Image (tube, rainbow, N blue to C red):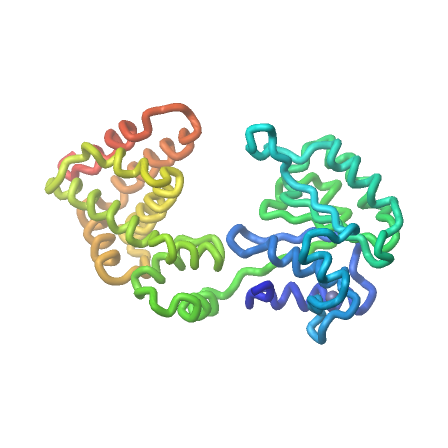
Length: 328
Ligand SMILES: [Zn+2]
């Protein structure tokens, strides 16, 4: 499971550098969301600490170091992340005390005599003080120590940190390769479900999750209601309430994507959707046209950007859905 197919190019790069002695001690591991970057980082960290990696460079899973890692008791692994407060909510940033404690530990000799590995995730949430404190360790890492900075938003990292790390990026898959993988992973899913998942997801794992959580069904329900409002067959009341459950941010993300597909269709861009989904999108594009759809899309963006505010989102969405009436 930890060798997902889209890891291959980045894994080969890591292995080549390691074999040639060109691997830096400060690594920045990056990917777009939905690509299981954490899993890739674990694979790298395990390989660095295993005493007898296999032919592919992967950790053997059998040696004492591998076993201790698997049990979460390896003394030379440090994991820095968002700490939980007393209510169990994660902090919004990685703090300087965490980095100072890490730097102090890394100066000690490895207890098991092998490599020390520190994982910092999400590295883009280091606060300014913490990032500054980390610089010194990045510049002069202690012997046999590897720091893995893990980020799905590396653009937020300060340039001072970026310039001191060697970057390994999980690349994007070609759409056809991703479609093939998804068809194998979820062979029983319908073509409609797969097509929508591929168009909405930000990475392979999210595409698979989108199938499992029936995102295409949610999108179709939303679009059919909106099509009926546009054609005058239904009213807008109650639309907002139906989106509150089970997960409003996700529902709005799906809705936003559906709207983008309809807007594209109204401009002659192929939406790539099939079955009832495809027909519904075409019908919406025909009923409303690009200008109206663009305004509706902007209205939805305003609601999405106000999601964190304590507003009555169901009423806002009802008012927004009222604007779908084609007669306007
Ligand atoms: Zn091992």
